[in-house]
Length: 400
Image 1 (cartoon, rainbow, N blue to C red):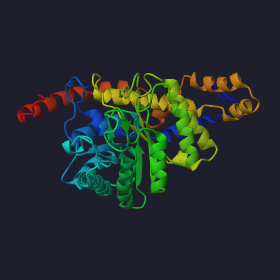
Image 2: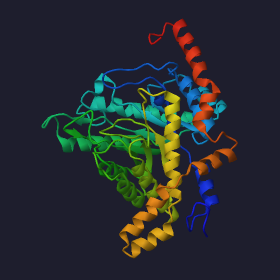
Image 3: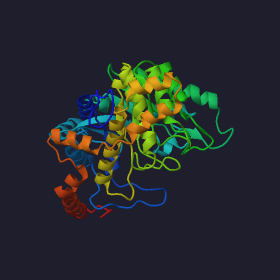
Image 4: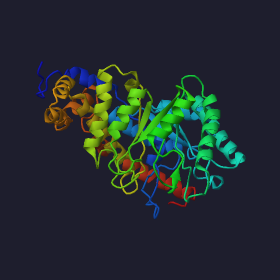
């Protein structure tokens, strides 16, 4: 069959249905003020409480229709009454997603957390993650997203193998506390803040840890956490094949972990990542159906909510293009040794203008086909700038 986009073997209704089912989680920390190492630029109306962050996230979900969950970071988002938070999110049409422990901002963790040479420090870190598991249970979350800043700056600073043993021991205690159905997603980063060694520096290290722990432990891929030139699509393919691709933290980068808007710098790379997932799904790979798609960005000079919407649009665009890949033609070219023919199959899908397709999805959902235009027309930005500045001033908030 040949459809209106000129592709063969593509069921457009199935593509539209898949796009409608695709969801992306936004991070609470993406709605508040953040900065570079040099400066925090305060944005008028930026959220300063978890409820304000949830309210902003509800606006993103309202205009995109694909962002019903919000990741939280503890203790940044600590609350006394989690049932009240859950109820408030429900009223906004949201639910709490991944719970992220913070093991990098306490003075105690200067030389590490789960890998620290001092057993008391390790125990403190373990207890914090166990607290996060409890919070996840209270809010109905099924994901603990773990990133460690643990590492060393100098040769000889610590024994690298002993650090690995401590890490595994700590993770085993944490894993044993996971209730059925909850996943531990182990993130990695090749450098920063440590510069000689990082205890979870790459996907292979995270995968080894996950395999040692059990089936509820999987790998989290942050698209900004790799050396220049890394083929992330190949990493995704390997993890899918092992059944251990837990999820993504989407952002983009130019040099390192830049936290730029997803798809703004390397859109073809993002498309290739989704092509691996789409191809695995076509082949019946079970892992491809349980991936947690999450954004991890801290917008520093962009308007917070609009930047988040733009990231969602860019991710949706890459996903939609990947769904248009003609896998029958691709497989035929590959098995014929037709190098350029196979590349052109991908190129044809990537160069397809999917904006009409995404607009059709929005219309079918009863939404404005232009999410950013819809958000700008809502007047929400102007309202929160007035209300939050007024509230901050009356409470003596220093950022006012």
